[in-house]
Length: 39
Image (cartoon, rainbow, N blue to C red):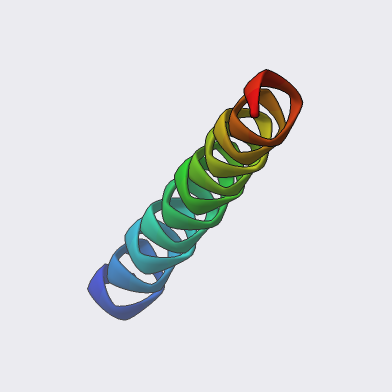
């Protein structure tokens, strides 16, 4: 029981990490695009 609980927590954290890193990549891309357009 405890084992599966902690595994679930790990999965949740992985998902959150994946989502946040994806958001960061999108932000970086948009910043790069803005830089390119403003040159």
